[in-house]
Length: 290
Length: 183
Figure (cartoon, each protein chain N blue to C red):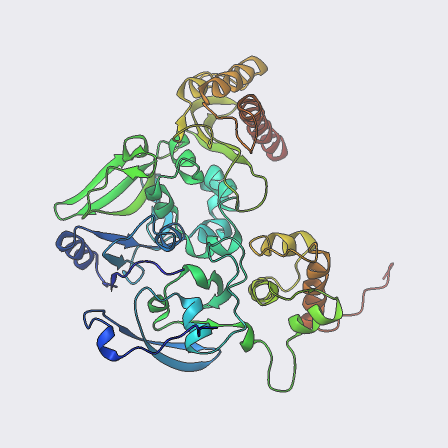
């Protein structure tokens, strides 16, 4: 399958890339291309120009900043995160999701930021970003702006990015205490869309939860921010009542459809189970350390 | 039967179709081509360079039959444009064997009966190569995980996993003699 014809540009600076996007309204940014290229081959997308940002230096870094925030550049591949030795300590939720994205071959090309920009309601990273209250930094002709992911994603496959703006970085705010959490996804086979997925982030002091966030994958028309469920955990010591309550509220926040991957009831049940299981894993890990 | 390629008079192609010159290393050898930006890497390898060992299976980023190494990392060559390989190194299944010897991964697939129809095999072997380059002593689980982006409809995977473990052992060479207990 061939995509429609397009012009290809591979600028070596961000300014050059933004200028190309500004001059060509129907241009698209190419980073990992693991969603864009299949869509172009199926002719769901037919941009007149691709602006390949892979040759722009400085976008392939991820790490903790001095202010405690964690930054992930636009060219950081899923595999970079999966293989990172330092990530599990700083961002356990991201580390636990990295090896569940797509399949190993797609993970060597596909990028974290690109996946958020693709805004697929089935995307794993959007749920992770929601749970961690992450933001996307974009760069346009008038400079940079920071948009919380909940505002960044405007709907299925839609973001608030202007046509001449490039998402250059994801920012995860500093932890209020020690960061814990995890991602669980049910998929029929590797690379399939999620039947259901839960991203759960906890910021803890000792055994008390200072802050919590829960994002749900694949159980609605878009990524679901289960804020009430997360609120049920804040201030608790992850006692049984708080956990049961959060699991129930997360299942209620889900809005799944019955389809070939399972009934709506089943998917809600999976969501509740995953919330409890992630918390149990966190408690188990704490016991190991203690 | 019509040919896959039809020669057309030069005037039939509108002159505003831009082509780009790409130069890349394929299996250690520098190759160059003028390509339309929409040409996929898989097609440059197969139709351009006649390296037909790389197979296109699903053509939708699912099956992994078209897997090649791009700067040492496994990629689906149906999901990259040839222009993106400019200045990079690509290794296809043809790059595994030397003129006289099969690569241990190829030997492993032969010895352990790791293929039936053979369609997925080049992709399987390139994913296996990437794994063993990084992790010379993988567990069975790690092999299964590394190959989870490559689909096979014949074997049920058992012998493919055995083949990769066989190759890993061969590539590590003879194990140092185990220490005797009590010493």
